[in-house]
View 1 (cartoon, rainbow, N blue to C red):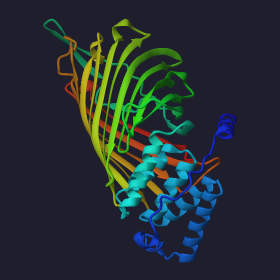
View 2 (spheres, rainbow, N blue to C red):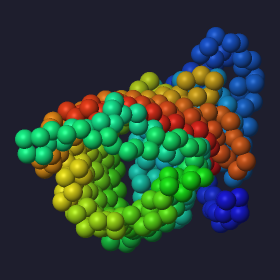
View 3 (tube, helix red, strand yellow):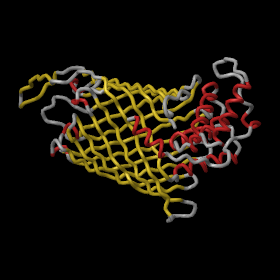
View 4 (cartoon, rainbow, N blue to C red):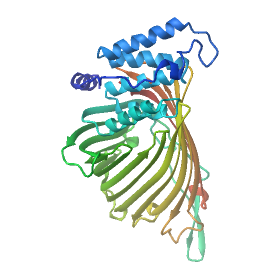
Length: 425
């Protein structure tokens, strides 16, 4: 893995964009001399870090700049001027998702209109970017199923007789390694669908791999998407065919071939409306009655808040149409999620969701309704001012869900965790 990382870093191209997207000091206020926890911080230390970050950015060392600006925001995450420079440093390091996040958050800060327009310009430039970039996350997780079922006994109807059966479920727990990431190449196109709209071609490889000491719990997903992206001043659209493969317990389990469409519209006040729809053909390698189609859709809004974070609300749908009755369903749900930077260099990403799953063709053997209702919550905690190795930072993820079915044997609680490192620059 170290050799792979070294190779990517060697071919990684860093490009500094001239000019500054910062608001002036009078608009944002002088750099704080006390953090939000009340601890006294010498103003000269803050100023020295800020100037050191600017020098690193100007001298083509965005990684050093990211470290300096992150250290200041760990003391006071409300400093919009510093966050603007952090966003610009991520932009220069070609860490597009992080740059986009920081720029979007600043839109809810106290910024002059000219700076807001420049920030929207950066976001547009990110969406219309060219070249190669990659992301990687490595961590430890519970590789086996974390489900705790209410009961293993199920009652089935055979004519007028109702007989009890005991399900043989694997309840073992194992610690595994999880790796997720993507590598993307983008190429601008000369063709334009409308004035002030740029177009680009992109190719992306992605993976989500969980590997455990017992190969029974191995779960490998890898795929590729390639398509077109259209970017206007405040809108972005993309259309892409997608192909993926999944391997379970070292065996080829399933292929999916489909297409997805995504869009976003944003405002200068930090409001974003977004959505995505996809359709895929499912080819299961274990059983023909699991072949079919998968449809997914999502629409939502996201609002930047107080220059330190964002909150979003979305509705989603998933429908799977196969012959196997336990895998033929329609699922509807809503999710409330957010991201906020707090003192001590922490980024919190909490979320809660509610969903309802209805089975289209339940087995006539069931003595109850297998439909499910689920409520869940998750939080991801990132330490954004600590950098290990070549720009990796630690994180901790926790999630819990409670699913209630009309059949007790299908009701369960599930807890998942992951702790590891993710690439920041």
